[in-house]
Length: 395
Image (cartoon, rainbow, N blue to C red; front, side):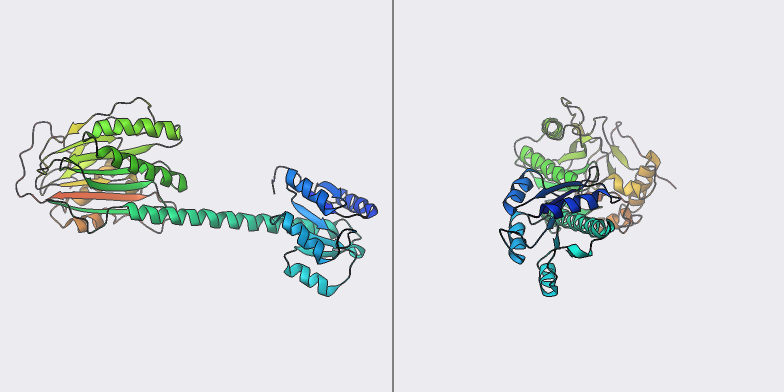
């Protein structure tokens, strides 16, 4: 029922005196109704096709049909409209069979002596049907969300998937059944390793669908282009056109060279961090905006200022930071990085645990939380270049 209009009551009754009596009763009730009376089920079908009523009042003693046959005919026309029997047939057995057949109530004409004798069962029937419809819609959405969640899980890299000279671990904890965060890794034709972490604004089915679209776009483009900035530039045009600024995507896309020594990357409002044992974290970032905001934005490819050898790359979404501070700041980002950096020599599976230590997975208000770590298995680290910018470690 549309709460911004009066409920439409359709009465199927070939006794015009009874129709007028019901019209008068309803006009004197506290609820304001739109009321239409028709004499035949065929007329009712024509009206229902034009405008679905909120409730049907049905007499079981029509000239064209009798008893539960009338009910079955009406139910064939509409399965979603609640039906209240309003009849002169005082037959307990028929009343029970009618209720078992799905009617909301069975009212005897002789028992209606006040407006509320009609309006109360009508209002209750409409409200029950509204709640039932809402529950059905909710179950449908939950089913869609569950399907999206299962598809998303299938799209994440398999935990046992291996890549030459690289260890990796990822974890994604959506706030809803399906979320807008994702991470991905894939070997590309030139022998390099492409990797990405992304966060679609909002959470729910819409961001989940955009997340899957974004992943598909990036994967397709990475097979024919190995420049992260060019890939994001092209992806941004598609996403901007598709979402019309209803959503945006923060994203870090990197490419690890064949020899696993260098990282080139493009950042769409999403930083990364290079960690080394007993070394200050190195921030990998750019000033480029998230995808889906500026239609013709050209994204820049940046090369990491230091070698990836003997280092760990840390990527995470801001849901992790939200769990640390209600007002995410540079300090809260640094706190999250420092939590991991202090233990940079630990196995990367443990580093994921350190990062999620402050995340309450039972918090219904939290955001999606995702992290991806990559570690070089090369033995020698290159010296840092003058372009290194540190994110200071806390004591």
